[in-house]
Length: 127
Image 1 (cartoon, one colour):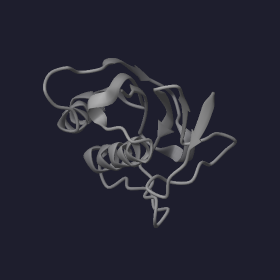
Image 2: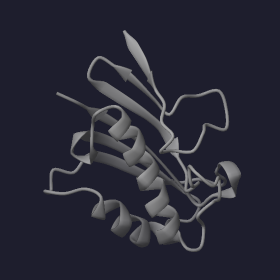
Image 3: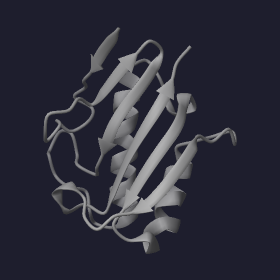
């Protein structure tokens, strides 16, 4: 049984996909970019601002599903420039706590939707 997760606390999808899909107690969150959910503005003043918005969008989806960052078990980070890794990692890490960090990969890609610099997807497991 799958349940589609949608929230006003993340930007509307720009294609044929859902914010998240819950299957049993597992939540698969689509890749999020630094687009503000209320204004539609891309928050790209700098890579840290952009990453904060990405993480806030993920938080909105997790919350809608009754989960939080402590429930995240897997993360994928896409960057257009691996030179931004340290800054993205600093912001990303500030949303996680306790050292029980999720599994993760970070890859450099040539281009991301809307011309953004970072996109992050997660998988979370609830109780």
